[in-house]
Length: 172
Image (cartoon, rainbow, N blue to C red; front, side, top):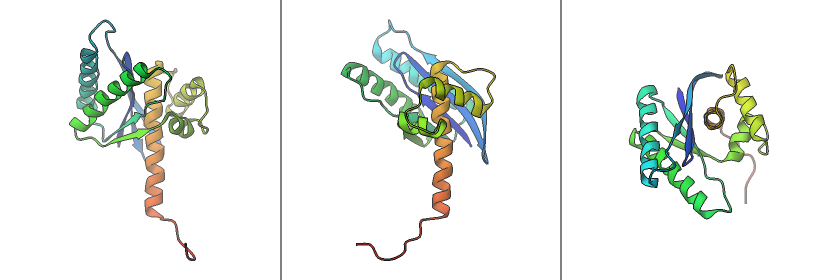
């Protein structure tokens, strides 16, 4: 299964692709879509959509995982991030790809083992887990972390579905 991870941003949207084969995670590609900060904002959103649509056409991922919005003191920044995130989600949905969303806390927990990990710790673990020769560009590394999070989360979901919790006694 090919997983496309997305780290949305209005200036830079990172993407990372990995293949999940059993318990192995194999790096396929990563990169970033850069928008022209001088361009009108709708044109920047179009660039994100078109860039991710091209990545989807090239690699045919089975699923997309997107980092959820963080809460910011700056409402304008949060709004722009939400719109960039929306452009990314629409690229996936338009290609009939299931889209899953994960918070930064969930991503850090899945990659490093605790939700308050520093960005550098996450980047280092992505490099180690995928056997990369060097740490990827920051936004691409974050996108790979989102893909790893989904790979780990889907494993947990499949185990849970195969072994539902047994209920004993009565619940009131």
